[in-house]
Image 1 (cartoon, rainbow, N blue to C red):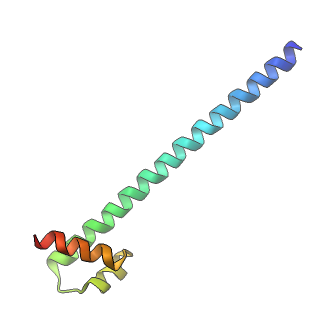
Image 2: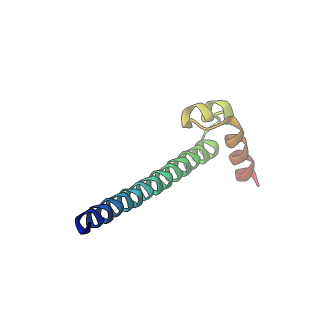
Length: 78
């Protein structure tokens, strides 16, 4: 009985630890995706400011939706 309880407790602890590790990994992935998106936006802003490229071309280069590039262009013009 005691051995069973200890085994159950140990198993629950391992599951909880796995859950925590998974949550932390998911959070790191979300943060990395946010940084990557912001990096693409910054690069698009530079292309808008420094070149005569159209929004479609910038969107293709930076792998952003055209609407996002249009929004960034509107922001930089104000």
